[in-house]
Length: 436
Figure 1 (cartoon, rainbow, N blue to C red):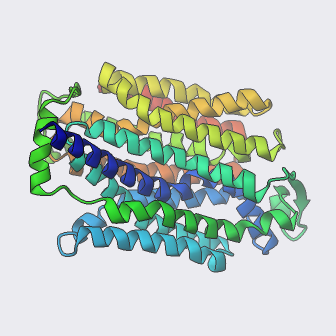
Figure 2: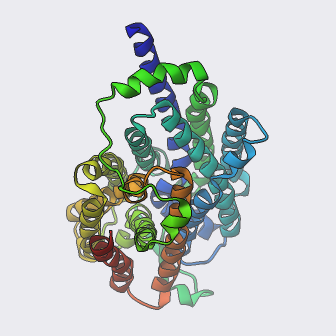
């Protein structure tokens, strides 16, 4: 019996690790985009594309919006087609899309359309890996999802590392240029060296190769447990040391949940979580491009903030188990709100800016606590459907982030932009404390 249990544990861990690699791969485009944005902007500028760099914030927003809204497609199609084949199809399609950017990623519009398609495929990849992790770890689904969240967070480290080692290994600095045909843009900061921006198309090839390596184990290995394996897991669940402390006095249905005030407060919190997440991962280079000209140091910031976000996703789940959703959410947003505003001043000094960005990224790791919070507030019943409904708040958060980014181009200064990003986080902090 002990041998069977040991074998089952190793199978569960193998499934989880393989799924984590797939989740890490699909997350690279969005969590590395902040590091890549200056190079992409320089490449498009040299191709004759003229727009403000803040418009690039549309791309990670589109990615997350399609991940959120289309991630359930694989679940619907699996009622007709084999689920593993569908996962392999989405993984291969995601890889081919990334590879084809080498030829077609030469315009802002093309990149926008590609981000929609990549988000569509990536969302279904993510839903599959999270679902299988839960099936193989029924007594430790929270920990399993935390581990997947860690790999998602660490994906930003990959992009920053590639940018440092491949795109700009000599730490060539940006230059300020002016196009008299577009006076409204003023002086823009770009890389004018063709050895830098000319490597952008090959970035997509590198990512496609990396996707192949990361997706292959999950395509081959990850699957649902058989009925016999489910029976073998039952003793493991009974002997599990993990006790789920997040329980609700009521096991709400979806319609009962929608009638409560707590759900809409949590929905607002999910929306502002995406604001904090995008602030930490997407605009740190743009904010500091004039005050910290060292491109290598900015890439180091991207790598370190990815690690902080990864560990935040793990630790906030543990914290939520200990103190509950209400105080965990309050504590996270209490960190996020002032930290976002402080970015305006800390960007004048490299190391304080690094610490500041890391605090924002670590605190935004609370994103992984959405599912545990739903369980605590509304019970386990229909948790997948409850989760998908609540996660749709991310759509509005991404849209708001993009609109605020565009407004910062002409309507208001950076400090106003950061205050507008921090304001919903502060409101969530207060609302969560009062109503949850």
